[in-house]
Length: 469
Ligand code: ADP
Image (cartoon, rainbow, N blue to C red; front, side):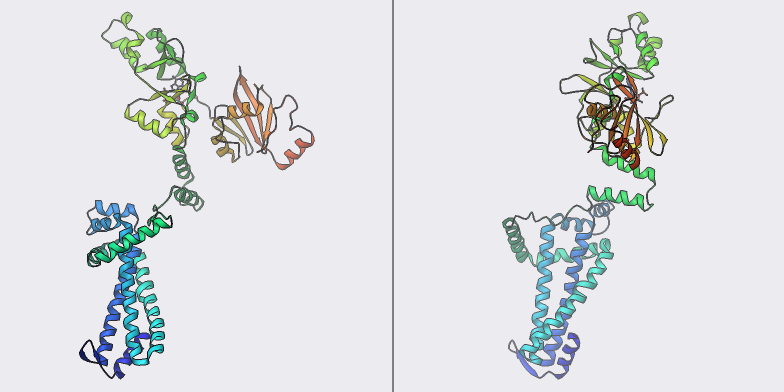
């Protein structure tokens, strides 16, 4: 609309004198139209730059720089100071938009008089800017972020030089204002957050983009960096170790009987672990070593090991063990007492799931839809995941056995029951004081009601207390 008005004005223009030059009205109008057209193109350039530059994901830009793609490095240079880049784009965009509306107002007022000219320019330029200065270029930039950001990089750099004083001034002023209103002035947020990736994994599985196995492994990877050593270790009670003064033959015998290739060697008590011996070294040195068998001592074959606190993160420990080429670490508590041991396998299992060897039993065995048999040392998290229930996590106990003890507040015996949040836990097997196995059954609503009526919940037969939530 505005354009056609401008053309009409060109045709009907009388003569005018501008800046001392005798110019015909028509010439001024033509110059004005040309200027407005150039400015609208510039406006489109700035708007599209903003979208292309700030929508270009960091990782993609880095990939382009690594591949040596033309002008990618310049894009990176510009994006390295996002605040300066934004100021450049905004200063440029505002100058061209305001210049455009001033020129249009002047020309239209010349033809239609003050008020009408102002109104026509306001609406006409708004429409033009919205359409050709914003909407079209931005839509284009959204779809062609990679190529467009590289194409506009040089002109943007040139703009930075051209408008240097203005940009420096506004860069400074906006930073000051940001400080005043307590804003960090952060322009770019991370491309994706951890939470977003986790949500994508969830919806990926729901929508069938990810297999269930892939989904599980990805979820475990995310959980991995919150996992501490205590959650994955083999507890002290299950540790197979040999005293330092044992003979090589005894050590080999211990390895074979326990089925473990590495065993810790301690002096005095398990709280004083000196290192680890590997069955390979024991056998090799006994049979093929240079030393006479009777001179060979276990102490000679001990390899150093790491002592780590139970609260250590497994991802850190895994890196450390890989760097030190160690497969086993000894876990100690805050008093320096040995709590257990952890091997590479324990940590890798956290990501890829349980690795069972020959005779090993499933830690969680499904009996029917609602019932499972769970070994006492299984982590609460794993029980919750397998049964889709909500036993409390992150408290002072890690394992199902720990949870049962915690609720009972005392040693429990075989056959005792706890009901928690719609789940009945029956202790199936206790060795000495240790809960080896428990049966978990999700109660149907009816079961809960019946048991409540019968007064079962509070605990017949020495049943441990029922707790809920
Ligand atoms: P291995 O194959 O020698 O048993 P892995 O590193 O594959 O050793 O560990 C398998 C499981 O056995 C892990 O849960 C680990 O904690 C446990 N484990 C390894 N060595 C011992 C040991 N000496 N005493 C007790 N448990 C051990």
